[in-house]
Image (cartoon, rainbow, N blue to C red; front, side, top):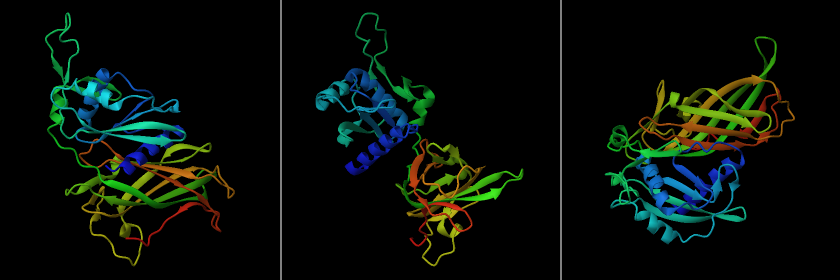
Length: 326
């Protein structure tokens, strides 16, 4: 992973924290300050084992409640050397990055986990009443670390689906005022999001629709709300256009299959009470989660769409969709 990609990952985390949104990424661990290196080794090993070859990111100087607090001074080389001493034979490879955020600096620790399992020493083994257990295979579950069970170890033998890269290119949201079945005024929302998808392995990626979610939010007016009737597909599934259509993306009844890079479109809708008028000025925030088959982690996409002038029929509009790109 490039240093610019790590920095972007950190800044995305910061933006979510500032917006009061949950982190929703099991690959990430936030630390407000450096923790004891010996204790950190067990947590890193558990996190790396549970990641099943995914990269994991620790960010020192970020706190889920306090936000950006900055990383205190610490000799990283010495800290990591002490932590590595707790591993039996092999520790995850580590790359570190100083990332400026606001007027502070946080430290991003990127661990490569593809050589799992990682085993750590039992610090009580050589002490009084230390017991017969000399080593442990830790496993992260939620935010806690425990000893791995047989079922956990079996997971290490099954390769995970490599997550594709997804980039939100453009999108549009429309809210059309209608009269509901009870005579109440309602808004019928329609989302279309343009995503560029790029598989990271030679194997096709299958994304079932029922494992995808998308939410819409307007801070102060509309809480984070799940949208319905989510569909994914290549551009020709939704639009009629003259540009070349990629044959790498195939839409089926319940899923979409991606064999190579191309443009992927998402559609979803929602009905809410009418709480906006043509004077709306707030942007909408779209957060999508796509979980490929045989993957344990979803790909998260966030897109903020600015308001546009309403249509002549009163339809409210955000963003702008470009359908003229391959």
